[in-house]
Length: 293
DNA sequence: CGCCAGGTTAGAG
DNA sequence: CTCTAACATGGC
Image (cartoon, rainbow, N blue to C red; front, top):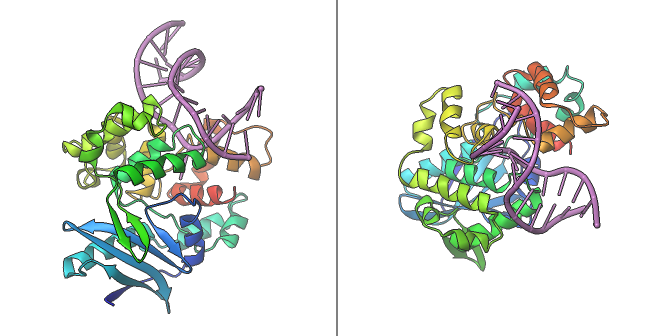
């Protein structure tokens, strides 16, 4: 079987990161089997199925289906590097967090836990919209139906592996078909609007990557359905800005409330104030606060 | 049953 | 610029 490897950064706990990847039993975009994760991607018009697991200090990538041509290998390795955030040196974050009351214990408990990214911007924005104003369990139910219905599929050894639906296909979907999956009218409209923006070339990860943080955020928020929370979520999970974080996030507020033993949730101003201490590492501060829940 | 959920928008003040 | 109602439905 064709394989390749990727170097691992020092602070990297594969088991902790797998924990994140198994948080919903309804996930169709990857499959965790024991101590490895299997995922399907499309590159160069070809479906490539691969598995990832750590072997003696490196990540071992096994190509299970699809030609591991040089181009495909590069694409998959780049994807995995972004997915698992293999290029961030967490040392400065851990040094800062060790002095912080809220983060101190969390970074000790979850050392090596990383932000599992969403390298695909269309997937990232669509997933964020699905998660808006509903609980995560239901968001996964909606995503499950959406991917199962509209994503391409590959059978391999008795299991199905899915690709996230293509923007062009989603843009052409009717309101009714999405409502039948229990999307609200609002989610249906937002998802189709985002898909249209990708399909007609108005929005692309490549283009937004050229822009500075604030400018990229402004451009993202021009899309109907993408507010401050969603834009920051994408900047954090897809563009990997270490200073991006979803200020309005309900889970983040609950984490702060719990750890600070408050009787109410913090106001946006209080969250802003707290996060001044985390300047430059807001994304990772958010990750560890989320993990505390 | 009631409250809340990984929010956003349009409209009012 | 800030504040608020409406959206819409499952999970616990």
